[in-house]
Amino acid sequence: MYGNGYYIKFTGKGINKMALMNDNFNNLVANYLFAEIAKRVNDYTKAHPEADVIRLGIGDVTLPLAPAVIEAMHKGVDELANKETFKGYPDYDGYEFLRKAIADYYKTKNNVDISPNEVFVSDGAKSDCGNIVDIFDKDNTVLVTDPVYPVYVDTNIISGRKILYADSTEENGFAAMPNKSIKADLIYLCSPNNPTGSAYTKEQLSEWIKYAKGQNAIILYDAAYEAFITEDDIPCSIYEVEGAKECAIEFCSLSKTAGFTGTRCGYTIIPKELKMKNKSDEDVSVYDTWYRRQATKFNGVSYPVQCGAAAVFSEEGQKQIKENLSYYQENAKIIANALDELGIYYTGGKNSPYIWLKCPNNMGSWEFFDKLLNEANVVGTPGAGFGKNGEGYFRLTAFGDREKTKEAVERIKRLKF
Ligand code: PLP
Image (cartoon, rainbow, N blue to C red; front, side, top):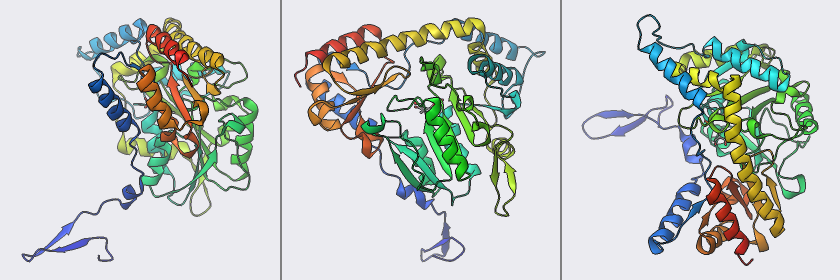
């Protein structure tokens, strides 16, 4: 290899320069979780075609978009069909009507003052959680909790950053807390958590904020499941906690909140006061840098989708999405009640669509997966797929059909452990 980064391939006919891959991709750990689940379920259904297999492992919603959303999207499409109201490229950060609706939602729901000019509308929280790494130096150290939503880990591996882990375990209710002896620059927190369903209290978030500020770190706060929070002492936004605006970015999504998994829409809040440093030790605006990044690589979310998203925050829209959320919340309660009856330890279910349970009799995650599939024809997600602390645990979700959820739970209750 030559110092200028090109491989020189001798072909005998001349010299071909070859494109070099980003070597960091070789550091990704192959994640066979969902492929392996699909394989085992396929093998089982092939051998038992009569089996009625119920899937309680899915992380996708099953209820349709709310009528207010559909109506707003139709109206948006009609406007595009008319020369007078046609719209071309949207703004990089989203239409003002949607950014204002989001800022109003923060004020009404959380009593948090966010300016519409601190909101970035996007095609979902996964993109933003993944793309945000563009604005940070490669030499930052990243802290994630374990078990973890794999996007935080893989996007930083691809960028070549060092990753440290904070343990979420039964001892801390699967809600990892900071260890002051660990130095980190970027801290990913997800509350309510995927996969563990745990949610941080104000006091716990306050500790994280103190920890982050103590070392000039930035918290990357994923609030994708905030709409599932039912308890008063659990904040829906990190900005409900004092000091967060100077150290946190918040990501949110309409995917699970309002059934936008297929439609695609999310948003990211970057307070104007949030700063990072450049190599000359000067303060740099995180908002301005992210705006520059988006202007370079992103051309916005389609107009009809933004119309539908704004309808989510209308009075009618909020009423309608709450009906869907209650449906999932009731499913979560049905699963949680069954685990209570069986005396099985779990987290989540109360402020989250995820129920994270300890596999009975110290079974391994995959051992329990096979037992559930073979003996109850129920499919869940082995916790081992989310990190080392997930081994011995298992994730069930509340996004399924009500009757099927009830049936699955009855089958689990009949199992002999
Ligand atoms: N963040 C977490 C923690 C998630 O679990 C998910 C989806 O499963 C996302 C983000 C992705 O959200 P979106 O559909 O908006 O990309």
